[in-house]
Image (cartoon, rainbow, N blue to C red):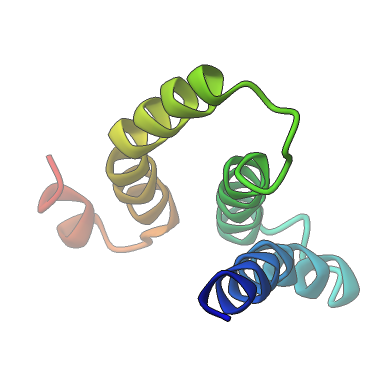
Length: 95
């Protein structure tokens, strides 16, 4: 029972990672760079999480990609916030 719930939640997580991209494309906001950055971030997140669902994917590769993604996750998000900020005072707080 627990593994079935885990699988359902895992699939829903990967599907929900694609929602920001779908919204950006449907609303035709792809030309606005902050929306591009967030959409690309969530696509990367979805790809990393989908690797866990593929049975034939090598476990060692999944571990390496997960560690690299976890190391880059915070800097990517801070970079996206920095690039999305319009206020120079707010941008200086990141430097």
